[in-house]
Amino acid sequence: MNHPAEPRSSGDMESAYEQLAAAIDRAGPKDEALFLTRLAMVMVHRAGAAIDLAACIEAAQGEGERRPVAAS
Image (cartoon, rainbow, N blue to C red; front, side, top):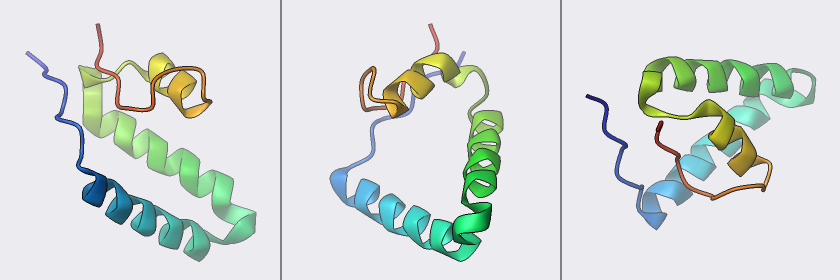
């Protein structure tokens, strides 16, 4: 049975933001979209059925909650 992960602390989120920003900078403007797509696909694969991808996309677009969404 899959269980949603506990939300990350604000300190963990800040560290994740810094790591992501650095990785995006390294990818450069030309490859930014490709990097982000590949990163998202790796994360979806690793999360498996524990997430509702459509709900995560809505949240990232500002249409839903701003926290990870567990699959129903």
